Image (cartoon, rainbow over all chains, first blue to last red):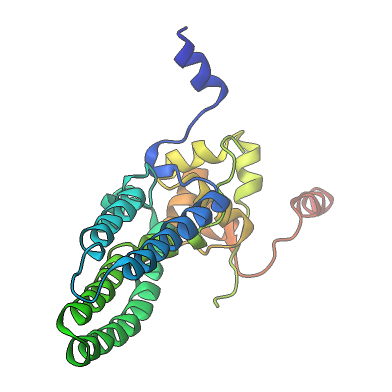
Length: 166
Length: 83
């Protein structure tokens, strides 16, 4: 037997669509990605000047990409391809996924409404570049929530996996 | 929240020496869903309930119930005494 085969026999891994990871690490990932994004956005905003959108653009959109890649790149059934369809999910997981989408929509709809109003105020009342920078920040935040919130909610709520072979 | 549906999946699985993963593979569901079903944390759809009953070769009411099941041992002993 090869080393890999021996290792797989001692530490069996469920197939991708059965994997989820521990709840503790998933919650840490939520705090890390969203908290990190927020921290970066605040720092970039403080570092920007009234005359320019740099460094909000390009670093905040880049942070969006990184956070999305982190969540969609994990080899678990919470990944995007699974969220996009029912493949690999049984009825319980479909129910949980649909519930995550519902909760995400409820939160996102309220956030988007407030963000749009605030960005309108920012662009109308503040000087051109500053207002644009603030509006872009709000838009990026809304875009991040819109793309990752269902996955994040599901990752936060799903309990620890049970050990294989029980 | 819907009242839990009781089931005998744990007992039936143990009788047949099946692990959760094996039962899950046979039913085409996630192995954690088997755990949820056994604990009563998840009520199966009618279709899944029928599939589980068919897998064990038993009628639906022998596997699932809205009321708690009587212990199998007391049912068996009562049957022998009455026989």
